[in-house]
Amino acid sequence: MREFTTHEYDVLVIGAGGAGLRAAIEAAGSGVTCGLICKSLLGKAHTVMAEGGMAAALGNVDDRDSWSTHFADTMRGGQYLNNWRMAELHAKEAPARVNELEAWGAVMDRTKDGKILQRNFGGHKYARLAHVGDRTGLEMIRTLQDHGIHQGIKVHMEVTVVELLMEGGRVVGAFAYEREHGRFIVFKAKSIVMATGGIGRAFKITSNSWEYTGDGQSLAYEAGADLIDMEFIQFHPTGMVWPPSVRGILVTEGVRGEGGILTNSEGRRFMFDDIPDAYTSSTSDNEEEGWRYVTGDKSARRPPELLTRDHVARCIVREVKEGRGSPHGGVFLDIAWIKEHIKDSETHIKKKLPSMYHQFKELAGIDITKEPMEIGPTTHYVMGGIRVDAETQMSTVPGLFAAGECAAGLHGANRLGGNSLSDLVVFGKRAGEYATKYAKENAAGQINNDQVQKIAAWAEAPFDRGDKAENPFTIQSDLQVMMQDKVGIVREEKELNEALAELEKYKARAEHASADVNRDYNPGWHTALDLKNLLTVSEATAKSALLRKESRGAHTRLDHPDKSEEEAKVNNVVRKGPDGSMQIERIAIPTIREDLAQIIEENK
Image (cartoon, rainbow, N blue to C red; front, top):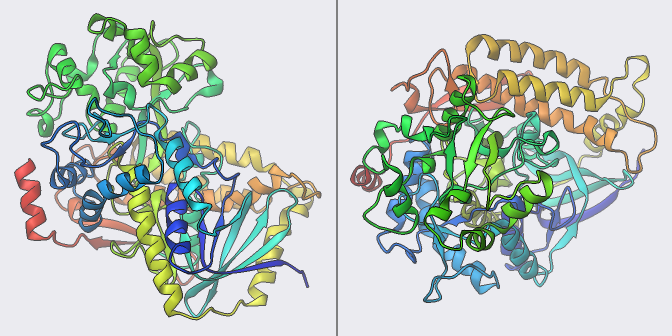
């Protein structure tokens, strides 16, 4: 019988990004014990990579903005597959959460009269993103951590959760290991908040950091929770493409929000070639008007570079495929051109986009104040994830809550830039609040030692794989290439079926993923265990994409290029069947409340 370190909390939060920290602050400040697990070091959460800003209808730059306009923009961007109640709560509560961060010490960029400055972003009707240069996520994490240390939160760094522990259909704890020396840990908890982020490491080209292996989605799925909207993977239109070592690293949408333009190898602004009918009334058809919009002219219309991310990504792919791409397989993003309009453009760019200036100067040897960047689409965000209740953020498993990117519903078929950061704090707070309420109303469950021993045996299996042993890094790399090729930006039935067949082979290979005997500092072992999660979210994505026979938002089918009225009425729900196989159910989207439907109609 193995022995384990055991920790017991009222509320356990898995993930220490913006959503996890905000949930932990809410729980610990409500008089319950709270444990916080992070896969990496505290402060290294992927939230720090969010650069552009957090969307909230403060109205500081454009007083025409309101929660109702923000709500309508979010619904339109999500192609109306959103959970409309979540979109309503998000739009209404985001300003309070931004002001709360400021009260806790966040240092925001300012307008001339001292208010929080807001910038333009794709899909948003008005300048709405509160920001700190292009380092907004970093400031959010700094602020939440500084505030959180006074709440009595117990932090467990460099710990990975392997499986959730169950009793009578509810979660009662989690089985984990610490990454440094491989020791097993059992966490007992009355409620658990999942805040583990996305699934980008299932793809070859991604802006996501190494932690994003779909842990939360897979753990919840194995515990019996529903996943929803997994076909909707956002490919951010602007990631670095050169040099190869940095391919996929994010280039913030803030570059375009500050006036950056997209051009092809012919020097032409190709985004003017394809403005969707839904945006013709709000999007400029000439360069001068687009520039006036960027500078705050309320009578001007937005430049086409600020259309939704799914549309911009598809336009870039078209230019590359038709032979008008940049030398390294992308297109050009040019912020240096603003020197035609701004006297000291170099200082302006360095002030507004300090991280981008440093990133390209250090990694690619490019001075963005003088020359264009080469960019291309990169796997960035999953709109799908754990299905949650809009009010409480509880999943379909009692006691299991979720917030942030690993939860689903708010963004529908496509997320608007900037909505992710406000999503983290709006629903992180709600998850922490209701997880605390659940913990106060329910006694702790019993940990089943047989279940614990079985999980431990599975986790140790890679140390004894024998003659058929296979390198886990090779398996993950092969999986990433396949997912990028067959379940990437554009999809079709033949390739999706091929992907599902190949995933079965990868499952078999994962059973032979091996690791050296020593548990200390063993990334091979960590990767061997991560493969299960990667395969689960990959299968859920491919099966959901195959079932949705239309093109909508971030899901594009070459064999079904148009939107379908029937598909617009349903969400795809993935769950584990009684026989252990992955099953998909189509559920009808609830009829939107009449007053919200009126808001959408008025904003069209």
